[in-house]
Length: 245
Ligand SMILES: Nc1ncnc2c1ncn2[C@@H]1O[C@H](COP(=O)(O)OP(=O)(O)OP(=O)(O)O)[C@@H](O)[C@H]1O
Image (tube, rainbow, N blue to C red):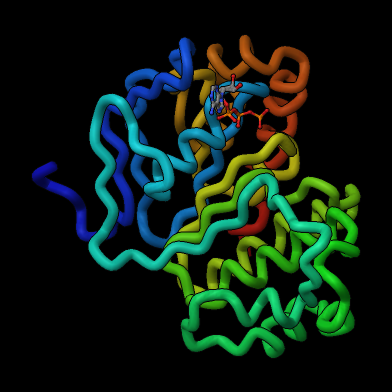
């Protein structure tokens, strides 16, 4: 692992995973740089969650290596949270269970516009509310790398747009990198720096503009990818106009 750039937070090299009889991931190389937003896209069962779990150190790969910057502070919003229906826990109580890291849970809840949920039982939150509370919790230790697994599930379409805009401000406020899994191809393309297209192996990786035109991506996502190529074209034009004084 020589030559690791000082800006690198995480590096996955030559990783392979079998779960049961299935080869879930093969020959995966992935690097996350400080301050970048990196999005993993891919079909159901492509191994996206498995790759996040390996990056986080929750699952050991059968082959390859995972390097994390020593002392790296991580925040994680999982795809699912199994809540015990019989164990009463308020949002406030849940946030207080998070590892201490300098940020005040109620201040952060307030900052996210969720103060009204503080005394609600966690089990009674809607899917979208729960996702937003989980995101608040993941920020409390001032993570250098925030890992989000399908963070907009349960959030309505307008909320999803707001969420992807919010990611940029979150990155600036925390000074962190963000690694996320998303199925919202259109929305995420405007918010991410790089995209990794995964289908058990890495099919392609690059900027949103490059990915939208990549043949492997188009093959994987079909018509959805075609419309993205048009979107990406528009987006590039908008950027050029924005730079013109
Ligand atoms: N513990 C396990 N034992 C056996 N197979 C597993 C296990 N966990 C996951 N798998 C399988 O590994 C494959 C990859 O699962 P993973 O959850 O990483 O996919 P994903 O890309 O996140 O999918 P989705 O978009 O549906 O959430 C799937 O086929 C899944 O059924």
